[in-house]
Image 1 (tube, rainbow, N blue to C red):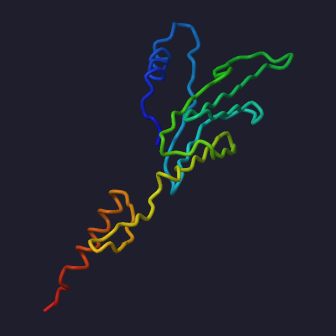
Image 2: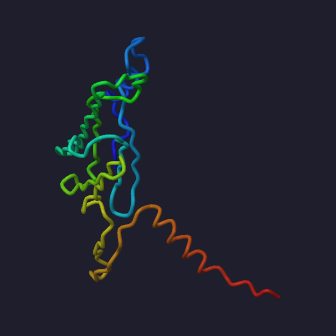
Image 3: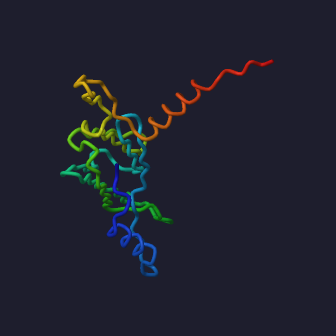
Length: 166
């Protein structure tokens, strides 16, 4: 689905943790990702970002999110605490070959950017015709290991003799 390890991202994370004393630390864009049916759903937390300041691009198997959040105090305002991160933030996702980067959909609601990335057609389960011994064709369904295990368990349960209860 997604590439889970990006060595450059890990180096950036270590650099953020170490940072220089007194320097503001760079912030990453937190995200969640999960599979729902035939699509991957990715959600990014980007509160306080104007939808016009969201730049989302897809190039081959890389999705790049770039957002900008700025706040300037109005004239006459005295800033007492300024902890919310400001500036430009970037996050990249490396998509696996089993996803379809051409049909990514995005929505932004309540500070959460949601991407819907469909599973590529070639990665979905499909029917395969298998020729039998006498050249008869039989239909076979390609299944995931989980689906195969569920089917074997169901068959084993249906073959067990029913208890007589006497």
